[in-house]
Length: 147
Image 1 (tube, rainbow, N blue to C red):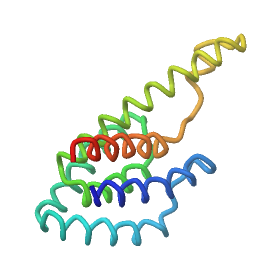
Image 2 (cartoon, rainbow, N blue to C red; image 1 turned 90 degrees about the horizontal axis):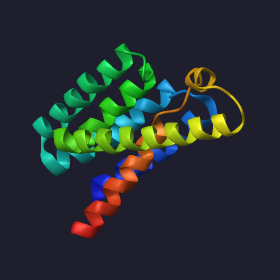
Image 3 (cartoon, helix red, strand yellow; image 1 turned 90 degrees about the vertical axis):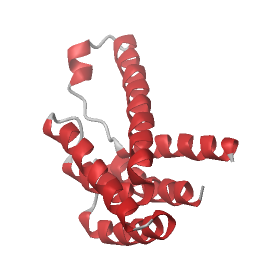
Image 4 (spheres, rainbow, N blue to C red; image 1 turned 45 degrees about the horizontal axis):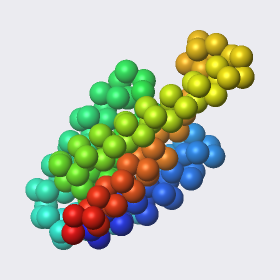
């Protein structure tokens, strides 16, 4: 539960910046990495933190390679993997992708309602970290309900 609160806090800070600027600021990443690594290693051990970071990196690199997310998203989610471990990273990405899909669907419907075409809607760029924040909130609520 504590890890989910820390995760949500980290993603909230970066999510606001990503919404405003469509960017993850590199100078902020070391502080996030330190918090996530210490918390993850303290809660699950060194292997837990490193395997979570590896899972985060490998999965998000695939998303980056096919241009779904940016490089800053890869770095931040790799850092978050240190806190969540492999299973938590998979859960975070599952909820994040579902939230992003729902957000994208709403955006397309709004564009169509304004008389714009799907091709114009498809060209738009969206910030991914706010959807990760939404996914972390879902994780936080579900962990609280099952606690």
